[in-house]
Length: 469
Image (tube, rainbow, N blue to C red; front, top):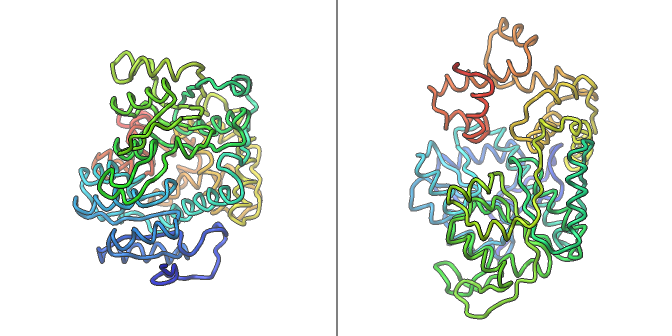
């Protein structure tokens, strides 16, 4: 059996803000590029993390099966190395987060890496400190998921729904009423509005509450891998299928399967999911035996599926199978009264998770947060609260702290600082986005990457803030 300490950078010191339940062998790195190795060693050193290094997928695959780490980084410098991602995902546990990493990769290489099963692409040109924070957060998420699975079934950890707005209260009330049945529910709303949180709440109020809740993002995986994740596979079903593996429909074990971003499924996958909904049966890839799908299916999409049906991109029969009950989650900007409660909840939870002193937000700071547009919704708010807890020394976080956070990456003169200190938050955002866009020669893909948002969100920002108009 491999020793997790061999080749790993073992560091015993603890850093405030790091999750204490992360194991020494939870981070695995597959890399053969010297430049990437230097960068990642710096990232690991800054975060006082531990990593197990391998030079190729063959060496790493056995380790993944034995130790079941939480995070895998795969260096991708050419198309041939992209195949490592698919091979390693096929050998690992379903919950493993896989990140590709490279130095100035081409757009085509990034697309191929994501199609092969990487959840994200990390650029070696990024800030080592920021990437270290991101890896630490991903390792914490993996550790929390593992602790939930040790001693109780996934999905039994109670979720807390925070809401003050009448609109959200009505949605939650409806969700609780229909939870008692086995009706399929479609949850719609922008990214980051809390669709999975609501799905978990419905599961926990259903007759299947004592069983597993398993979730999958249908837009994050290529079709072949998504099919394997959902249905499982038999030994030899495809290259790298070295043994039988259960899919999510089996792993749910009479519980709930949550299909996130269901609108991203290919037409072929739509047919296969429809067949499960109709017959309540399925086969593993490469198998002949029919298995019962004793599960409840909840689905979610940030797209308007009715429009997708009209455009011919989504099957109408599958839409009606999923759309027995629809719950439409409003964006955070349309329920600002929920922000104080969410901020307090995130502050308490994150302070415990990261071993930090709990902070308060001043009334003016909460008013400031309520005035933002929140393109990333609740997820963006949680990210901001986390960064403020880590970066602010004061017991009470103020509007000044929030404004400084939004300005921190802008390189400017003292005169610009004075002007920005009295500017509105939208003006600060406009200045920041404009500068980054200009620095990248108008390249929106590079700008979005540097800002840490997707290209669609960047276009929305440009339009809303009137940049370039």
